[in-house]
Image 1 (cartoon, rainbow, N blue to C red):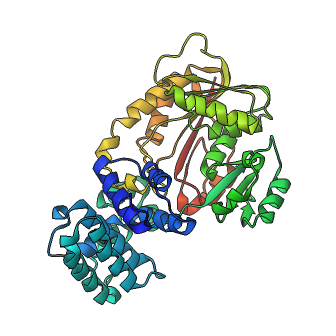
Image 2 (cartoon, rainbow, N blue to C red; image 1 turned 90 degrees about the vertical axis):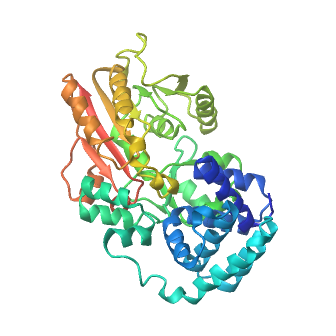
Image 3 (cartoon, rainbow, N blue to C red; image 1 turned 180 degrees about the horizontal axis):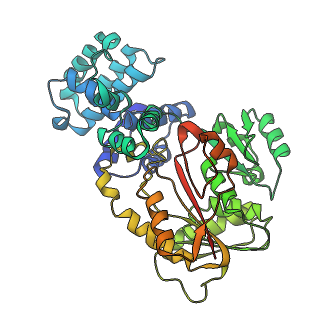
Length: 445
């Protein structure tokens, strides 16, 4: 792969679309297999995610400027143009001449030299019209879709699900850079010591006032300056996941099951809330992921977690039936709440998610079999889709009278929405500053 940030991004984007893989995996592959400076890695990350996020916008601009339809262009030429137009529209510090010249030079290096004149002409035409490029957007949701690069299908879906005001806020913030949150490992340090150490290495941070042991970090690069032992003083975990752990209310000495545990963050946080006393069974479908959880738990000093490969949708083994005080059921979902982290999700057809609620319900039913009488069951997703959230919860309560709603101890989250405390809550990025997330609580009678 060429050791050049822009060329590397062009090739990675073409490969991503060819394989229809996940953006975070493709970016990790790009950064691992190219010898780029730290500055070029930052540029590559910005370009890679930026082009995916803004694809509808970029394609609209290119469609008006090019005589050749995008679908008929060679993939490397198409991605070269997208990368260049992204720089022209969204990166003020990149001179327009540099963006154009790099693109023309790039297609030659990628053995698409016959397209260099075409690329030059298209981009220079766009440069001449940069001041008016936003003036002729269509009105209504079509213009909203192009401006924010959010498919009309998703806009319409969120309007039906949450109303006009929330839907428009979700679209307006869909390309925001998500905040970086850390969870302090209280088994090896404390907030004061960790904060002092971050200050020493120049890592600007804020201690979240509404969530214990949660830090917001301005630049994760500085964490590279921590000593090896200090890297176990924290782990990345979004505030939404941390809120879900608090909602569970696990106590020292209890038996907890985390039925879809990978990559393990919730199990680690719950273990700390239990003061590393009691037991946590962390399960996942894949043995390799269970091994990863065990390894990371050992690094963090968590000793109460044991793992087991298990299909959460399969019948509950008799040895586990009614064995747990609290069961955490964070199910596979469509991921519509984490689009800011995985921008390609927005382009998926909503029909692809129609089978998920049945799987989620089956996992919830099987998880219910693990709960002791008087115990707690908690359901969660990282999606903004009532069919995967409220509908699953309503069906479960209707078909399982042995469970009743449990009010969630998340007063600050409900207050942020101006809502009364309930057994369900949806966390919105523009309201709570978190990923989009859903949590529901039940008690077994």
